[in-house]
Image (tube, rainbow, N blue to C red; front, side):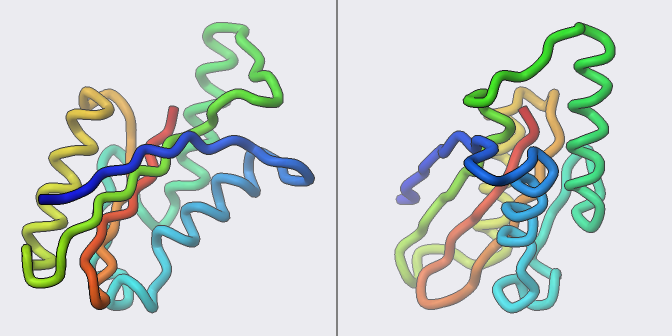
Length: 129
């Protein structure tokens, strides 16, 4: 059985919203942990340009609503699922990670998710907020 952790992502001190999103996307899409990108799935975005797409969506939201973010606002969610060794294949973990992210976002938000196939399989994903 997988364990799932949902972590809100904030800008953090000394970073811009752009830097915070780029940093976590770089972590999620790390080629050394994703079989050179083969274990990455994008939904509603291209995983190679997801940071720019997430920021564009946020600017469009601000333009449409006039809402300006506060310093402590959640800018995205980092979701991690972890599986026991031998419990599941990377392909099945990917399918479950995408399924979870679609349910979590109700299919209304873009996300990038990847599988890290090391000693323990885990999904790491990022959804725009």
